[in-house]
Length: 215
View (cartoon, rainbow, N blue to C red):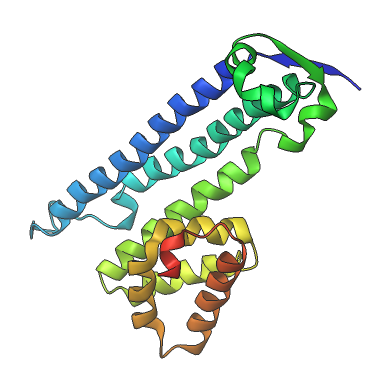
């Protein structure tokens, strides 16, 4: 059993700052896609300018923001685990009084005391990135009434329809409005509808789905 140490407040503060930057990236990706879509709608001569789904580079920015937010959130969870380990010997009624002091001093503990947080979730972060980008593609296909592209997205979603974290990230990014729009396009296609329903059911059962879907 090894020892590890950290100053909890530094990890928690850094996580809060970094997650804010990740959210900024997410918003900037949407803004960038909006500008590109405006050019697509401008009626420019395709002989000189032709833009397709691969040119919506805002999707990449959204994906990066999503991926790093997963890891940056984990950093804050590690900081909280160190804080809880440092205050474990205090009676519950005294913890609020002394929390600030423990936040800003070195906390050293056994690995087992913070092991429940897990290792750096790089695999989950990459899955979150892919799910967010896939949801963006579906939004764009819905906007363009592009049945072929919608089917491509659903074919990829089918590979993950039993993954609660992936499907929750996908539908949280897609949002209730685009979920209903997609259903309106595929309701006469039993295979596509089954894939979409199965993935949404997995996300709903995960308890990670945005509460807006319950309204």
